[in-house]
Image (cartoon, rainbow, N blue to C red; front, side, top):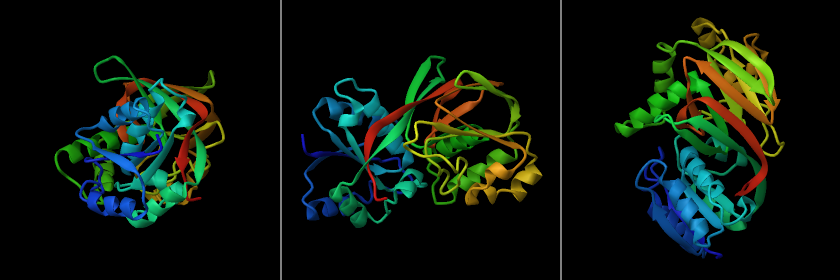
Length: 308
């Protein structure tokens, strides 16, 4: 089927539903054939995308943020009708962070973003298979497009998700949650293996795993990560005091975090992570279970529309 399946996220921070008429007009102006579905709940985009592939769609366009894109990607990867490389994903970045789109230079201007979709320049990127323990104690499977985290990162994500469900919003919400978490979070002891070899065994403030380099609205916790190198980049921020964290927060935005002596950086095809006490896990800005967690690269697994 040559039509696009358009998934409009009702929970994205940028108000995708409110901008639907603008997007529909842009699609019509560019003669884009499509059918549309609106999400009704968290993780609904996963189910819509999976069913879309089963129904014969091979092009899926997400109107939303990093979380909605993550859900749609997981849906494509979790269907077994066709290889994931038969499917193309596009994004109209109407979210709060838009970090995946930042790398691919997809603008938040809807008309311009649709023009890029129509142009159809493709990039084949890696995907990360993420296995965690769900809140119900059962195994949880998701697929990561961009960046995931544990420790402080995931605690911030939990607070952010809870705030969004209470109706809070705004461009500064993530940073408000970061401050809330920062003053209450206690470091955990992480045990991490990289491709089966011991890598880290100590307390840490945060653990970031990157398929891409941007997160949190432009931060670079994994500044050397690339979407097509067949590797996951990991940044472990160890025993960093809160005073030094505040003093060195600029390193998160200028790509120099690896220069801190408390930071360890590694690249591997597979990371296994355990924590004591257990740590929350976030994937592409979405809360996704707890440790133990295993992250495994799937090289060149999905076609995406890029402007790079």
